[in-house]
Length: 268
Ligand SMILES: [Zn+2]
Picture (cartoon, rainbow, N blue to C red):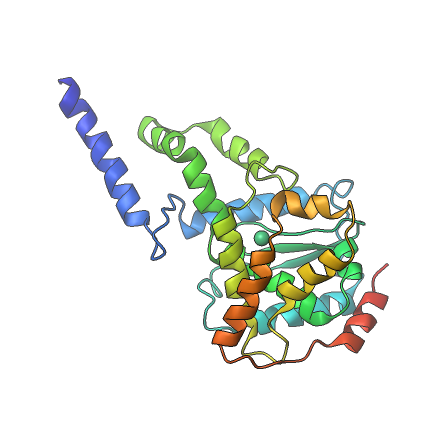
């Protein structure tokens, strides 16, 4: 077998995998929906098994607090813009730590630190953050980014057989403390845009992410660096959120301050 014919099937496979995996937004994702789900399940299990690093509030012990965030999530997931409503898990977890952050993992599960929840003034702000995280998962930003980082390595593994260390490497890189997988600016704008789109049909004011940024601008704190290691700040994002909101019709919605205060009082 000469060199060209030996490599031809490999080249063909690379081309066909890339072609088949192209999404309608033009970004290539070599992972399947099932990969997102499996990766998310594994990552969630690792987080829940590590209460020292991730002191997750037990839903069984805090049913009212979880009922509140799950109701918020269900209102967002009712949007027609959600692609994987049925396929993904969409579990929500609260982590009891004074950290200003929230994050999504592949497969739809999202996490919110009590430090962030307590900092926010109203439900619209948390709904904005939640819708933003849901957008990262539903638009599959993590596995698209992994594709761009590991594309050749993954393809090599596919062609040569399993690479048992690869999935561990990927999971290590997906660790929330790692900025190696920080989303791109384009991903952040997309997550902001879809957050407004998801929330617009609900009773809740759809500009929550902008309110959140405006509050950060007004009350700068070193703690925000944690959030900004994975979510770069940008005044242009505030402007873009208000513009999309206007394009959709500019309805005001409710910020739900009182019931958000009641929710905060349920937290430890
Ligand atoms: Zn983000």
